Every structure is written in structure tokens, then in C-alpha cells.
Image (tube, rainbow, N blue to C red; front, top):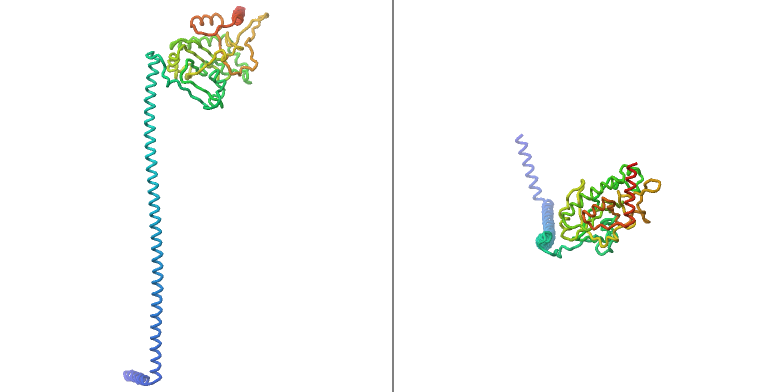
Amino acid sequence: MEITSELKVFCFILEEKRRAESPSYQMWLTEQQQLEDFQNEENERIRVEKHRLWLLEEEAARERWLKQQQRLERLKAEKAKQELLIREEWEREQRKLELEAAKREEERENRKREQTELLNRIEMYVLGETENLPSSARTATETQPGCEPCPFFSKVAACRFRDACSRNHLKPSVSRTLVIPNFYSHFRMEHVSRNNEYDTDLGLEYDDREIYDHFLEFYDDVLSELKKFGTVTQFKVCCNEEPHLRGNVYVQYQSERSAIKAFRVLQGRFYGGKRVSAEFCNIPSWSKALCEKKTTGVGLLRLFANSSGVTQKATKTLPKGDNVGVIHVIRLTGRQGRHRIRRENVLIPAQSHRDRIVCEAAEKALVEVVRN
């Protein structure tokens, strides 16, 4: 085995020597070397070219990155500038709001101080320490400023549309007259209406004398309380069927001082289970505000006795019905009424001679009916 291996090595060496001495082999080696050198040169050229392209791409990328950074810096600067402008505007707005709040607070304090001073001056006026009411207290509120005055409200200080009326309602802050809406109430007045198609016989549960006695009780109770504040010159109780006039009580004092006293004491009190809400009002003319064609007495409906002895309703009818913008008052009639007029000394318009005759005849007829 060792001889064979050595022989193979010897043969290989001889073959290599022979090849090295062969011109063709030398030429092949030269060609191979040239090919290898060319390949190396080509590889180097390709490497250099790729490196050059990479450098160009890197430079382009760097330029793009720089441009992007510049754009971002510009956007950041613009954003910072915008935020600065917004902050400055917000700070200006805050300073403006603070100034307005301070101004409102100052105005509120001034109004509060003026109101306190005004209330003190009104208190002094009410107590009689001063002769004249402060001019600042004589203000008025308007529901529709700039619009025409409501003729109904201007006449009776009440309107069926209330504050929703398209006309202007001028409400004084101080006057000699007070109105207490829906103050007087009676079951028959509240639930019986000639336009009600249901329970048409409900009003028969109460006769006219009971209703009139109920009114006299209300009259004595309320008027005696109202006279505590001063001299009453007018005292009217409405018996209208319209909701905005039904049960309204008008009281006019001889002086504004008395009216203010009554307003301050009555406001918020309760009577008959209802809260009293008095308002100042102006009644320019009582003769125009009161209905002269319909007067009620001897129990809201007058009674006549005809020749056959049958009693009948004697309320004067109106051409336009009861839905008119005037006040239908409950008048004091008969001996009880005249006695109260003399006792209370209230300036209530006197009845006509015909009305007195009618009332006396009605009372006599009522007495005859009771006796029989």
C-alpha cells in the first residue's frame, strides 16, 4: 500500500513537471491569469460603480431628509406661532371677560346699593318720613315695547291673552290702584257658565241669596283688612265669566302711600286657600271701565216679582253678551248694602232711582215668597 501511494505521488509530480514544460500549458495558465485579472478588474469596477451610486443615493436621501427636516421645522414654527397667537387671543379674551365680569359685578353692586337705597327711601315714604315718592320708583314694564297699547288692558288692566297679547301692556310700578286677579271665587262662579254644555243644572244647588250672603261675607272680611292700610276710595269685585276678569278685585286708595303699604303686606299672603298676588294698575276712567248696561245685585242676579208672583232673573242683557272688555261689578243693594256703604264710607257709585226701586221690590217679593 505504501509503494502504490508513493508511485501515485511520483507520477503526479512527473505529470506536473511535464505540463510546466509544455508551451500550451503555459499559454493556458497565462490565459487563466488574464481572465482572473480581468474578472478582478471588472469586479472592482462594479464595486466602485455601486459605491458611487450608493453615494449618490445617500446624498439624495440626505437632501430629502434635510428638506423634510426643514419643512418640519417650518411647520413647527408655524404651529408654535399659531399657538402663540391663539394663546394671546385667549389671554385677551380672558382679560376681556374678567373686565366684563368685574364691570358686571360693579354694576350689580351699584344696582344692589341703589335698590337698597331706593327701598330705604320707599320705606321712609311709607312710614311718612318723606313727603314725595322717589322718582326712580316710578317706572313701568312693557310686554311688547314699541307696539300699540292694548285697549282692553289700558281700560281694565286685564286682557284675555295676558302677556301673549300682540299689543303692549304697560304695567306701572306704583299707583293708587291695586288689582288682585281671581281673588273672589264661588263654586257657582267657577264652575257654571252659560256656555258650558255639561252640568247645566249645577248652578241650581245654590240660590241667589246664598251667593249674595257669601259675597257680603267676603266684602266685610276683605274690605276691613284693606282699610287698615289707608282710605279706600274704590272697591270693585268682578263677576265676569271671562277667566281674565272673573273674581278680580280692584281697590283704589286715596294715596299711593296706602297702596304701597297694602301691596307690601298682601303680597304672598293666603286667603281662602289661595295665594294672594296683588299688582299695581292704572284705571284711567272708572266710568269707561265699568259696564253700565249690566249691574248685578241681590245675589249676583236680581229678582223681580211680577204680577203672578213668579220670580224671574232681571239681569240686563248685553248686545255683545258677557264677553266684553268691561268690568261687571257685584253691587251692594238693599238695606244691607246701603248700611255697608254708610258704615265703610267707600266711594261706591250710587244706584239709580230705578235700581233702588227694583232692589226694594225684589226684597219685598223675596220676603213674601218666604212667608208663603
